[in-house]
Amino acid sequence: MITLLLQEELLTKEKKERKKNSAIYNYNKIFTNIPNTVMDEKMSSTPSPLKTGQASLVSISSKTEENEQIEFLNDLVCQLSTKERKTTDEINKIGQVLRSTIFRAVYLRKIFNVKMVGMLDSQVLSQAGLSDTEAAQLTELLQSRWHPMKTDYSDPNKPVQVVDQSNDSLQAVRTCFGNEVANDLIRAFLELEEYNPNGRYPQLIPWDNTAQKPMAASDQVATLIKYTEMLHNAYVQLDAKCRFWQRITSLTFLSVTTVVVAAFIFRRWRK
Image (cartoon, rainbow, N blue to C red):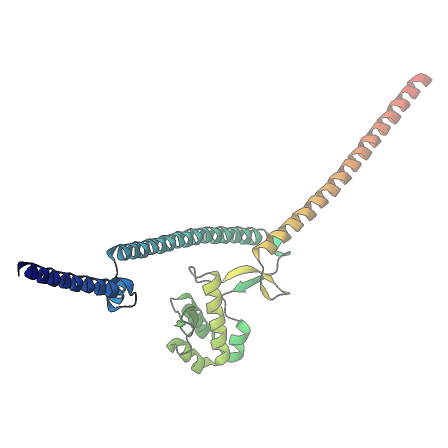
């Protein structure tokens, strides 16, 4: 009897162990050997903290690089703008020196064609029948702070300053004196804005009659160089002529002195 009981206990233990082993086997088969299970999907969908840290570092580094590039471009734009201002100031100073030398020397005015800008055309005013007082009023309007301009934002990237045709003073001039006087007034205003915006008075500038535009600074310098070369050549020729005549006068003086001395000696010898 005791042996039978022992055998039954052993059999029950073996059955329990087999059940445990089968359960463990099924668990490993489901959660380890099969890759496309729900557990694998959950594990793959949840990001690991290492990957998230690496992604944040990459995004931070890219943002810092973009900020550095933007700062570099801003510095470059500032440097280029300062250089441009310096060059424009130098060009303006050169133009002022050229104009002052041209208009100060009377003989240079015969070489350069000159035009008065920022001044109303007397022929247009006389044809419109304006009196002297009305013409003086228009010139006072030009020399004042009158600014019939507006900004055109049709192209938002490149806003442009254009004439405001709806300006009250401009409309009054157009209705009182006509379109030709109004257009001539706009022309004089634009010339003052371009050539003398601070002084607001008419100014003489070198003018190119062939191209019907102001003479460039390079053309002014080229004409001055040509004129100096002409002067130099004329001076060299004059100097050569002066030296030639100096030699002739010296030779004539020597010849006259020799003749006088010879005549004196001949008279003394005859006595």
